[in-house]
Length: 77
Image 1 (cartoon, helix red, strand yellow):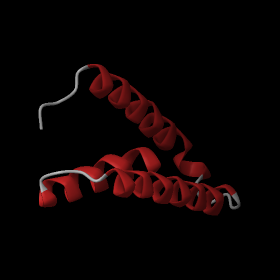
Image 2 (image 1 turned 45 degrees about the horizontal axis):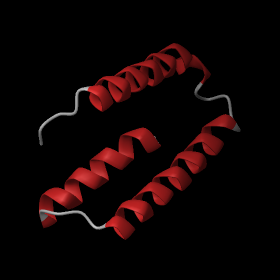
Image 3 (image 1 turned 30 degrees about the vertical axis):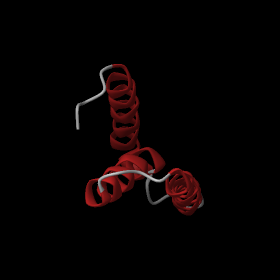
Image 4 (image 1 turned 90 degrees about the horizontal axis):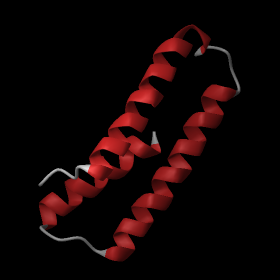
């Protein structure tokens, strides 16, 4: 969740403003980490997500691969 939210929020606000602000970047990071922990806690305390284990594992692996690829080969935005 955090890995998805950070780039979405960062590139949205930088695209609107045309520049980035360090304190806003740090705040976005902390908010996304808190959000990720809240979502993880919500779904870890019940077994409703168990049927989706394979899909969730695939998504985590996909995000990890995308993170590595886009870190090495940064897109020109």
